[in-house]
Image 1: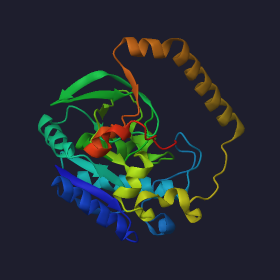
Image 2 (image 1 turned 30 degrees about the vertical axis):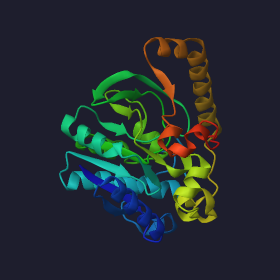
Image 3 (image 1 turned 120 degrees about the vertical axis):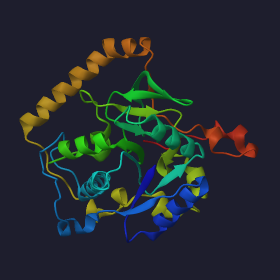
Image 4 (image 1 turned 180 degrees about the horizontal axis):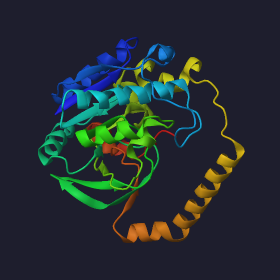
Length: 292
């Protein structure tokens, strides 16, 4: 399967990290130049439009990330690929990644998108809809954080490009959001994770505490985290009312029915015993997950 990883030209440390990760599991991947949020005005055909999506405005860093993924979707079509795997450049891989990618490619287009990595927050997932080897794939039933590792089909690339012309949304929410006829599935157990979702002590040791790898400039560089305008009052009010009604229905009926149907609520984190060596396995359960 064709693999891409997104990387900014001015962050070679992350490129080196990802080349090491792919080498570790024996995969080849093409580096895809990221859209630089510091120069967003220099790019042609940016499809971001305030108010054109779920959100009213997003910051430059989020535009840069969305545009980077969008350009990979365009490459999938331009190169006539049936399927491709997309990765951001702050990932940790388990060796199982190779097996799962091979199985997904052999299975063909029985899905649109398969999320391979963890999420920051627990997400409701359906009962298994498809089993690929030893991986049950569950439909993602709400917005899911992290777009760090996923497989998409040609059809999915076409649909995502259509839906994002224009856009105003976070890339992870947008990609995995439930839609009629959209098969966005979560692979469990996951085979990858952003470093920021791993136990802090493990992540710091794994990348030798290199902050350019372990941290994202999306959260630390004020130049690309400008203040965004609030949506008009009536739009915010409608959104808040819908959110409150949805949460109430979930608490009263939805959660119980979801679990009874075989669904789960999971952040799909990598189990600590998959990270630590035998000498540390007894301590793994005591290590807290990072906040958020």
